[in-house]
Length: 183
Image 1 (tube, rainbow, N blue to C red):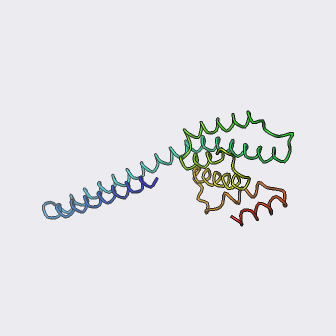
Image 2: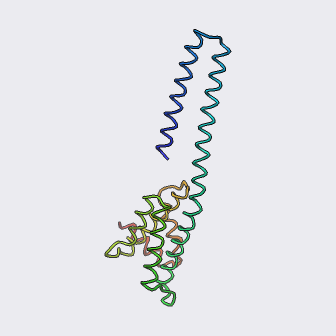
Image 3: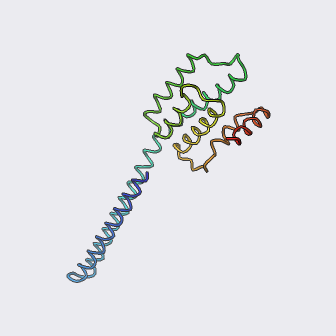
């Protein structure tokens, strides 16, 4: 997105310089009406092309949003299942099922997600498995990246608040909070 903004600024500056040059040269050698007409047409074309470019970016973003949100909802469900399976062994996911789901989402993310989100997702599947606190921090970073990827403009650290909301046991919450503060 930053490259597009820089390109838009460069194009706008070049168009402005071109219009000013046409006005200066035109004022000397042609009538005022002609110069103003050319300047008006030039500025209309510049504004129309800028609006067209922005509309295309929004259209692409909208198409990506649907696919990304479906993947990210699945990942959030997987995280929920992992948390619940830790508390209730009857709901525990088998290693085979967990691996299958992790690989499925990873494959979809390659196509639809930002690289930053893929990196955050990969931190969850490190070998050897991270500690509980490290896993919690990695999940929080993943939530932040997913929300950013979907277009949310959250403050830094919102992923941690989301993950803390996943913990309903007050003792677990206080214990985890204490461990995080020690880091």
